[in-house]
Image (cartoon, rainbow, N blue to C red):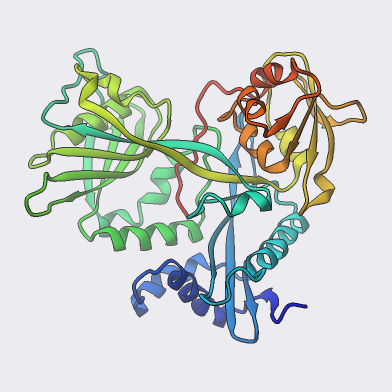
Length: 399
């Protein structure tokens, strides 16, 4: 029998949960002003704690919507703030918190959940899978020259961190929801962004691009100068709706003086940054890694919400240890998806279904490494087509 209880925390306990989480990440001791910014990210009823009776573990979430392939927005829970006190790890505390949180999501009819794990071996057992990828691109500013046929772009204005805070929500609504896996940002989400950007630098700037039809892109960046090292510009939150805004913002970034290198962090896999330049080798991919992990909380609703490309249908059999109502067989085809009693063509865990759902990973690859069982050897190729997307999935929001 466990020596702790798991329950929703009251509002007056939220700061203790936040401090426990930061301690678990070995973050510096926070100040009162840090909590003032972070407070709005703690939504009443969405903060869980494990207590014995002192707080030994916590997890929280806030509500959002996620765009699924085909364009529909569905309810999502953004999961963050997960931490267990040192000395109490590996005793089932995290499992108890996840069990309670997933049950809450299912009760509220949330379709999906998402998180950004610090480690890659923890959350798969709770049904989360690495559903989107991103890459960091380093651009040699002295070498990069835009090709003459690059779109001309429009006007760019620059705003300080203080000036930008109130602008971000409107900028993101106008530019940030075009890809599969992008999510809406609530006040709770923006609270986290403000806290993060204040920690990064008071010198953070926001460049806003305005085209013929109005605001169509923005980029948050800071310049880092260190003794005896090249000066770099770090690009964080960069969204655009058309080629003109994309090229226009890059043209502006390349014009900033006293910068040796531009580091574009966490960009979509198919964003053609290097192809803007006369010498594409002036831009190098520093790394590619998992960006966001998703969990399908309501598998029938999630499968029904997205569209599928044209191929012969497949029947998938889903396993889900934590939310057994999801278990069963589903027929997926160009006309949609729904439950069936037919024999399965593919068998997979709900965590693998999350990897397949946004089109980031192919069923043939997942089958090749044993993450999908294929009673029908031809079914993975059909699933590649059905679940494929023309635009790379990318969340683009850190929480």
